[in-house]
Length: 462
Image (cartoon, rainbow, N blue to C red; front, side):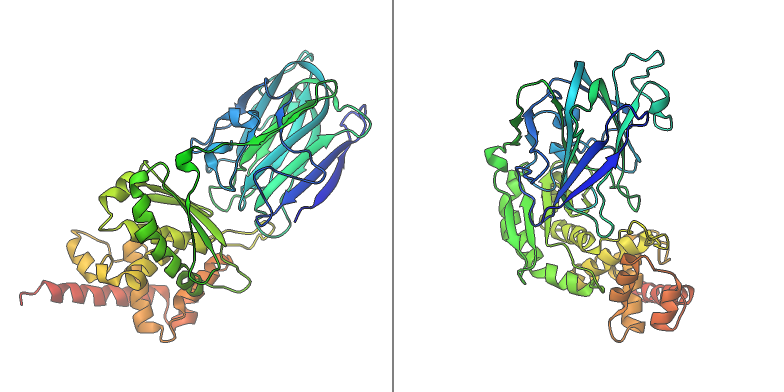
């Protein structure tokens, strides 16, 4: 469903008429490739920004995304989570500033910005400044921390499309104009972009297009969705066994894995997604109804950002009969976890890293594939030196969680309760006493002693 919101911001000098900001949002259920809104114009395929020069005045581009050219190429993404078709600042940074230099000063009619992402990277948060570049103290690239208004720039608008509640996934269109005529005659625009949240490293918006409409220019043409190659045209889409979730697996960059994805990976995930969501349920929470997996050559094993999993096809090819499916099961559990704080909740406490990773490894090694012995005593025996401490590593944490479940959790509710506390930002070590009657330290010491005994017994000759 789309909505429009108007906001007025007067010119700082009072010389200009009020600026009108129109914001529209297509939520995840209604977002589509052509970015259709009722009041915000569709993205343009030809406008004053098309031939403008875009540069980063401050900040770092994320190499997982597209370059600045994606902001004015007249093309828009076709899917909700296409990093390579959007520009965004680097993970873990606070955002940055983008300079747009037109070929000459123009009477500007509209400045429109567009974004698309299924969760917190969808909304837009920025300040827009403009200049004709004629001020004696004009600085075209003011760094963050400095006020552009003090070096030849004029503040035109403050934009913040984040909803009061929820992550605000979907498409956003923002149109900045002056109802009385032109915004002003400017050659330079400066976008001071801010991340939407700081609960994790993935808060920088996926910006899809920036349009600048000249008052006296020709009518802008409509942008077209980025065409896909034949090999990328049809990712495998599998629905979970309960019909709740659609899972997209894109093997276009690793065609040798297409059959494996269809015949092995897909059916396993379809069967297990309902089991994971049941185990990791919490009050008021709805697990993602869509997520994507991209298989392509890269580094490491796999990583998850929101509802997008990227997996290294080179590594997967070497583990097709080993850990490949289990590794992606771990990532799908991250999709379900969604341990994100909520804006405006100062009491939210981030989940400890050992639980963020330990819970997925517990489910993987002790629920999904216990026969693999990937985190039990058999695995511990194969390790030369492992610290038996609950937060010593993914698999060690999983082993600890399994011990507590087996010995102190008769109702088998511990993992569900831990997950809910992490997701809701209320986890504390006191939860262990409440769930088991023992402190975290007492449980750790008991598990340590029992595991040492098991290892010693296993090392005795038969």
